[in-house]
Image 1: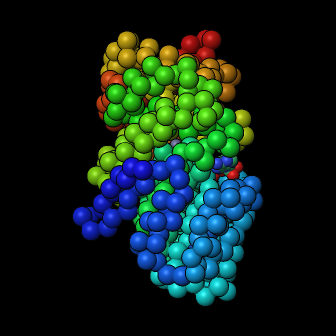
Image 2: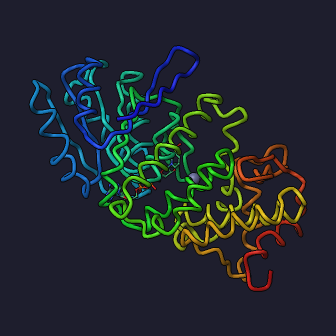
Length: 367
Ligand SMILES: NC(=O)c1ccc[n+]([C@@H]2O[C@H](COP(=O)([O-])OP(=O)(O)OC[C@H]3O[C@@H](n4cnc5c(N)ncnc54)[C@H](O)[C@@H]3O)[C@@H](O)[C@H]2O)c1
Ligand SMILES: [Zn+2]
């Protein structure tokens, strides 16, 4: 078991526990001495994992252990589902000392985190991420929230959990395309701040690119732990997104426009972010901010990790107006995070429209 301490404002402690046994989650909860009731919220498919791993542990004690399941998918991340879960908490007469566990991917984490922040103005929350993306990214940092018909993640709050409990072993049931999506965020940490992690990915790309946890458990454990450390360090230094946290946006500005233009159907988030990072690296080299050699390393790593780094040139004009609606636009200028080396970035806001078209074109056969 490894524990990464995470302190906000020197007072609030929200540790990340990484362990391959749920006994450690139970022990943590027991020691934290948090009420007698627990509501574990998850998606229908994951209920059997809870029954296998958590129910026997919690039912051993005098705990009232409840499970509530919802369908999976981004459309569930809305105020109607929030209201449903709040009803359950009211009916069960949950008190502030009781605990809610978010057991699932980032959708569950964001949604249940928001419920925990709202019920009685804040009830104990344990984030138990089960997708790779949630383990290395979404469950760390306290951002919670739901979507609105006007946009993604428009309603939400910052709410830190009692702990984030990461059990990498649970990934053995995660579909390979979801594993690859999480990998995009891991590559991102390597590029923005962790050259050793980047090198490790280069060395082990072969073993990792099967995207089966059981093919290389030690390697997956290593990169998950390293990524959780990176995310924790960034959010600790910049909890409310005043500066440093912006670097986590590498590949996301270019990528969001691709996701949106394809109506969130053709590309998963991680796939779009991988394309976005390849575009950002090409654009940085084009502006002489990144060496050819480092750019090649980025492009090669993405390819070796089986990301598709080619775009259809026909759609490129659709992406440009969508870039303007990115939430990182400040005073009409789009702020891009660009790599300047493996492990360092800059903010760049001087692209012209032809520059942006050229950046996307760099991934087409006409580039
Ligand atoms: N709060 C943050 O800082 C933050 C950061 C990044 C992303 N997010 C949010 O996270 C969400 C995306 O998260 P995601 O990629 O985990 O998607 P997701 O929650 O939809 O999970 C992906 C799929 O995998 C399934 N799944 C999860 N764990 C599994 C397991 N162990 N075995 C089998 N199936 C499993 C889920 O049921 C779902 O069908 C988005 O809503 C995004 O906005 C939040
Ligand atoms: Zn992302």
